[in-house]
Image (cartoon, rainbow, N blue to C red; front, side):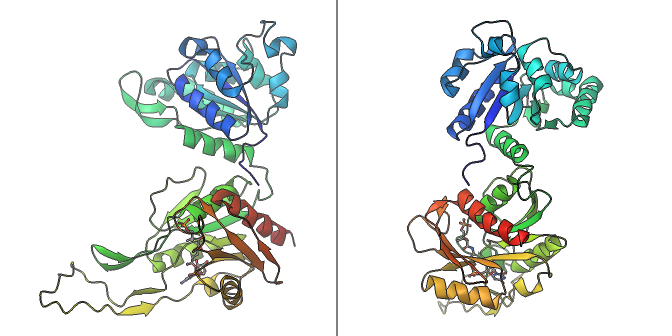
Length: 400
Ligand code: PMT
């Protein structure tokens, strides 16, 4: 499955805020991801950014006036509302939120909100005190009560010069919220999916660890893919430098023992577990309480390592179990052996020697093997797409 935006009809409502410039980037990213983006601007929004900017980015007419015969709405005043898969208002001002809460349709965007049957997502942007004002909060609650979703606002520096809650979310966060709303009725809606990610860390002393090259990208991509199919997702992660995916519950861990406890806890009542984490096979027999000093007699240092027990056998019955096998040789036989030993439903055999595949990179090449012995070799693809291919199979197995 490709990007969650591909082929989607997205109405981007833009209202008059200094944060309008961020909506340009959002429109650009959604268009690049394959969405048909119809921009509907309020009159005050056009004071901040020209409609030509949006038209140049989306290659589609921009709606600014209900009564302009050249405008698309002039032909059929609810045309864009009717074909929308989602209506996103970003930035959404306090004034526009108040209008929408009262069902006003005195401009093209208000009309679109009333006329659409698609989900509506609003991303507020305003002064902190305006956001906190009881009137704004009541308006937001009213809209929530009618099924409108809200993304943000974030806290930080505001155009007023003050700091507080009122900043429009950044583009990657907005994209996460939009993807989540678009996918909420997907094939994993109502399912609970647990994903592990990253390389575990075993402490040698307070400053040194045993870890591996896992960046967490594969596991995070699976978590996002599951979210974009409507699942409720828990991501059990070892330390990474990645941003937390929007709409995903994060359980932060470091050692194998911590990851085990978090995975087992998250698996209670879960439907699927995908273990993409690179879990350390060994840990130091002892963790020194102080930094180990360099030996002056040059004799070197011997570390005794103990084996970490596999925790797959402890996963409760009824959870569909998907594992990974990172291999540098005999890919298929080694993965088949792991599938049997760990009693998995599905395994992704991952040749980490192959160019563009495995640790740290954005892409991966895996072969999926199930209990029945079916072998499906996938081409090199984005980790997000690999995530979807794994979830396609998991979803199929769940239906069985
Ligand atoms: O994070 P990236 O940089 O994106 O890299 C992705 C990846 C290469 C780490 C990922 O695609 C991958 O292959 N992950 C599994 C790597 C691995 O450690 O495989 P393994 O063969 O050691 O373990 C097999 C399975 O048992 C894994 O699902 C592992 O999570 C699980 N396991 C391992 C040890 C243990 N004590 N308990 C476990 O449950």
